[in-house]
Length: 295
Ligand code: OGA
Ligand code: MN
Image 1 (cartoon, protein in one colour):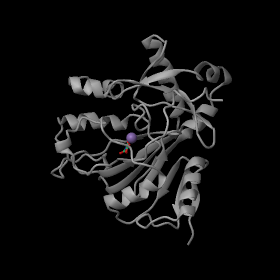
Image 2 (spheres, rainbow, N blue to C red; image 1 turned 90 degrees about the horizontal axis):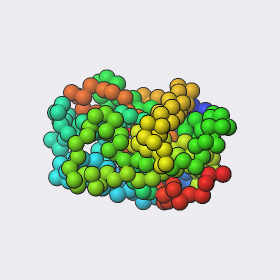
Image 3 (cartoon, rainbow, N blue to C red; image 1 turned 180 degrees about the vertical axis):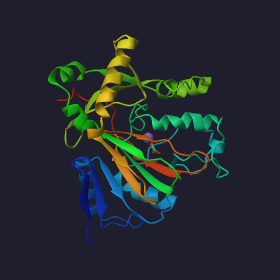
Image 4 (tube, rainbow, N blue to C red; image 1 turned 90 degrees about the vertical axis):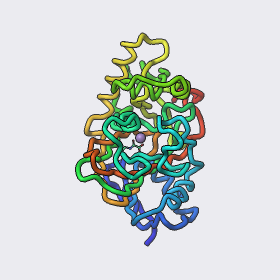
């Protein structure tokens, strides 16, 4: 059976058929998947159990892996997974759920806020690929919002107003909004804000999208309350159900999304039981602020 993509949510989410992600891909399969990502922005691939090596090998078809340094408060000695794998689970190195008061757990709860991966990095991520290795007994859906459709639906005046806005993104803004406010000097240095355009355009399709994220905390040149109201208002607009797809996980699903055109968030689950989801992240290739004003 050859590779095909079946729409799940029109113009936004597709399910990929006729592919085995544990096997090497042919150049034409890779090209079809890339074109599918450009067109949809979220692709679902049902799989059987895959290893971390297989997930990494599949992910590298789409570019180099992002260096995960500086994306969390987990100490290197406490990492459960090898370099290249982002641990999005609620598990410690011992395989058990983090204790309720664990700093790592409290920091990682930020994944339940709408965001785009690595928008806090000067060169933010291209794709994320998330693989479900074990499901939780309750909740834990992942939701995706289409930031192209959200942009398109803005009125002309709002588009003109925000087109050249530059935001500052930091993990301290997203976590700070949850009341997680204590950082070591090293973390403050690591989480220094970076600038991103609020409206970006896709390098292949040139479609514009709203580049929002919980990490965005200021707009350059605007007083803080004004910036926060603008961002909050746009976030409310962009995450209306009509722009959102809710992924209900089946075991071994792999979902890949384009961080340049989407936001996502995890939903709450029973954290006293495991939820093992592992992410690989494909590095982006350019900062958004260097992008010419989106046409
Ligand atoms: C991620 C993420 C949400 C979830 O993997 O980047 O935000 O549902 N995941 O686990
Ligand atoms: Mn994420």
